[in-house]
Length: 356
Image (cartoon, rainbow, N blue to C red; front, top):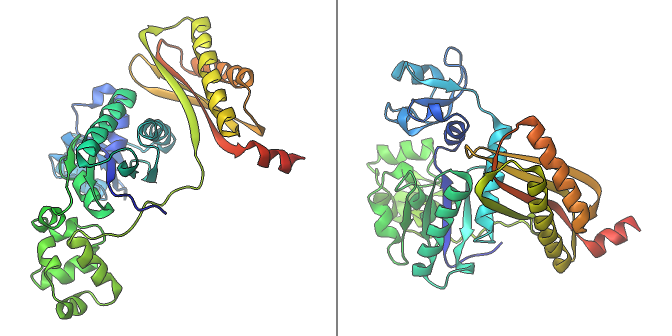
């Protein structure tokens, strides 16, 4: 666990719905709901911002959503597709901020203290992340920047969609005070009900509770934790994986390409760069992935996994080219970007001992 001095929370805007809009641009101007059967017992997974104007939100019953907006377009979730887009988003983010705690497909925390000396620099880095995600995936994200997780998370929701909120040290309690108490992470339905019944309807009112009232309304340790959070105090650090997840290189072309040999040449160059990074860190990779972004900005990737890891540029290039060919057979078309990535990284010395 690491406790950064400056942390950002990144939240992709209406992620599932945004992906569906990229895959089918005709949906952008329509009230779009990703979820279950509106004529059955399904629920709303997410809704685009057109549908949200009708008061439709996540976890609402699909039947209620269709009652509020009879013209809404319903699509069933495509989780494999969302995972694919998510991988590209977080690969892009890690290219700018290496230390990330991904808490879901569409959200996570970034250790900006690793790459920024102060909050002015942190704002610049956060803006770069937001721009890179939009440029690399055509998805928008919102970010909150603060000295602790809870304030950063609330901040990321303050200016949706596509917004950036920076809360400098010393301003946490002021920023939170006027918000509805249910906006504070950790306040569930039961806690909200107890607090409202006692007239505690804002985060500031929760922060102001004395010890006696706090124990009466929220007994146990949860009360102290929530009051601390209401005051902008949150000692939690980032929960990190022990090892680097992947290495990738990609290139956006000046003009969309259809020439297969030119595309293969691009992949060979990227494979050489990926192999050099593996060799520099003493690692080998067991999975190779080729990324394809088409002229309409839709993204596809193809992967293959090996029994034994590799770090040889020629082998990586050969696999990457085969994966490109497979992707183009599945969906022909001009490409505006290709990329090569490797994952399943293992230390070369460790692997040699295991297989020896």
